[in-house]
Image (tube, rainbow, N blue to C red; front, top):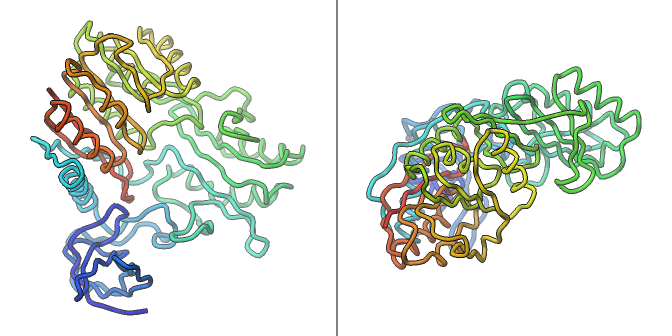
Length: 427
């Protein structure tokens, strides 16, 4: 492999150092941090950029620290454990600002304070791959970096400690099942009531398999669900009654969810993010507010608790039903409707003073293009992809008459390059 000395200027969207070689070609360097001088070994050359590993750090960033996990660098679950929290978040804020400027041609009037949270043991959702290899036994964990192989983990620093401690017992359990080579994944979902493990199985379980799963659940104090088909087929196995929920104490809310429903990975940061969104939107009693991509009611119900007239729109009928049940269980009046948000017709529901938008990675381009000239007067946009947020911000600012009043990032996924952000738009 070719070796070269590089000066690293930034981190990219995958947590790699960004540098240029003597010819001016961009080089993405794994394991390098901004401000560092490194010896890098190129392992792949492409037309417009090269990919490289850090062979040696010749000038170290003050933000560098030893990775906490012994599997870091092999396991693909984390990308930036070698950087401290401030370095990670500075890179994410810079990435948000650069996307807004480059793609949307906009800049926020104010940068919001960074939302920090727990760095370790924060993940309350994870999809663990499972694979049985005759020469190595069963493997359970995240996939290796640059590979479809399952990393041979003995623990995990970003999972809650009780769940991380189950990785080796899970390997033993999967290896003892009669269909050990037909268990492709184990999904973890943690709530404040219990922890659930959902076993995806491609063939029926034998009676002996069921007995092993039941004993595992009892011995380790977890709830076991089975998933013989798609996500909708997941159902409780042991115990037969199993309820997951999380709370939003500031609003006095308890929100129930299923282990295959979408919820935020980081419950602590989600609480802070919901609080910030509600403060920015500033709901007033009687105001009509639309919550788009409302899911289980994560934002709708806190807004309704402040007296606003909230209608939540969501593409999934199952999530809408669960949101309605959550509203009823919390004694709140809120309306939830199934809607195709790729081709929205909000005007059919009347005028909304304010919008809360929390779209998937694809963003909300159909929504922002369809907004009328008269309303809303305020939008809070929660994003999991700076590029699509920037694209939509460009439409809102340059064609829809809004200004980007504020934007900021939240540390929803420490040690990864994933950027969660929030933005406030006003007429």
